[in-house]
Image (cartoon, rainbow, N blue to C red):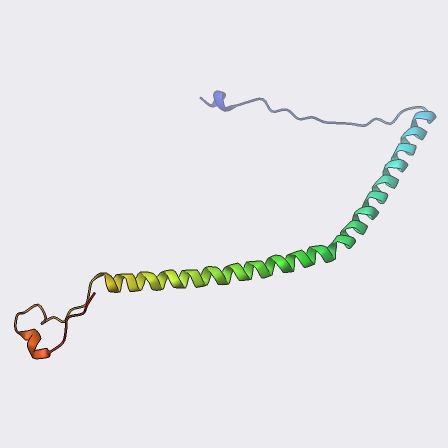
Length: 117
């Protein structure tokens, strides 16, 4: 049963072996220098781009925050209105009647008119 759960696991290992001759080592050093230069240039451009975009990002974040606050206020107002509507709907769904209004003759004693719908 455990044999069914065992699956082969593979691991890839990469080893770079430096060339033996001087021409190959010079080529590798040249490539490494180009790579370092390219990475430095890329990092410099990235930082410049991020610095240029930062004010726009902050402005858009402030706009989004204001829109969120407005939407939150509108949602809270709609929720309060809905809850109020539920309360009044329950209140008006059954007309309130005085306990004695159902007994004949006692309504004349209290002289209260029945609520009109």
